View 1 (cartoon, rainbow, N blue to C red):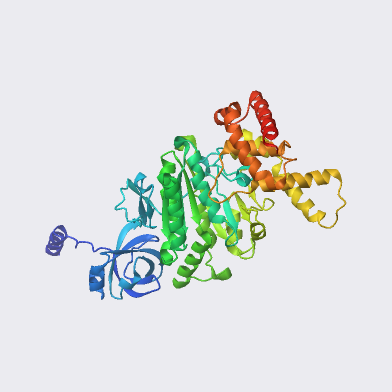
View 2 (cartoon, helix red, strand yellow):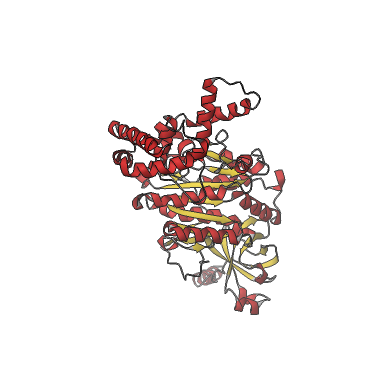
Length: 516
């Protein structure tokens, strides 16, 4: 017995475990951008997988094209996993070997992305060569907690009079842009990017435009417009076009958030535009159905709300201890027949800090931007406005809402009292003032002058068809003659008594000299 024990001890002492095999598996089924894989016992959710193209049936095609293709685990099942393929699914074949990388999906981020058009995986799409990245950020990341944030108190100027005056957006806010197709949703987002040229360079946010399922021609036009105006100097475009796989359309907003978070963590301001989340929801529904997840309302999966909430919660205004950076989100949602009570619109409305509602009827009446002021709201409110704008725009929203009611009422009868007639005339001029052409954002100080002239009654005797001409002339005249007023706005964000006196005098001089 003792001999047996001694022999056993010797065997144990000399034992060396066999080298542990990599966590690898084999593709058992593939189709529509989804692969089923057996053998990845240790795989985790959202883990990156590497498909070994040299072991596939399509070796020749693989050698002519990409050398490796990645996937992301989205379903963990009893004896297999299902993963979405991030690349050409045509190169994936049954029997192909798959390795788990042990890493979650991440993309390269850094200053090198500024001015570039990239895919949701950080690959260049503009033909300008490789991108120099500083680090990699996980595409999915837990949002900052309440104690790591501060309240939104710094304005993000859009250059659009109707928004900056009545539906202000603050840095760190999530403001939804919602409306039917072809009502100017993307235009508002692009105008906001262009308007940052009016901000001092040190105060200019980095802008990230995420195109989700958009026509390539539309994205190309937007990039050309940004380049022409010089706005690509502070802009990154993430493009997952209509021809991109559903997996990339689903991941693209998260990639935009990851890029924006890099700048936010540096203590800078960033603005990310998701155009649009309706198409991301459709792509996610497609993937979920292919992954055999049970469908719910409108065939969307049960976690569709969580998809958008975990994305939009990443927008924040960080506390001073965390560097004070911010990430502002402008998600876009497309409605059908102005129905904001549909599934995806109501989900996103409940997550965001307000919405800018664009209406088809207003658009066709020539009121552009077609913002329905009554249905639009900013839950941050006037805390995201400079004092001067707060002063001139305080009653504007109420006056416009009353004008809309009176306008409908006045169609039924012509016998109106003087105060009602006056209110209607002021309302007509307000609507005219708030009209604005595409790609023509207005400087904040110019907006203040225009709205001051409106609310103080200086435009009441100007014919409605001459309002635009009056506005353009007044701004040009004030630039030369109301320097104290402009200096006050630029330096203290509010006019002084001397500045206001000067402005009143200058407006009076302009009216008398130009025969308005």
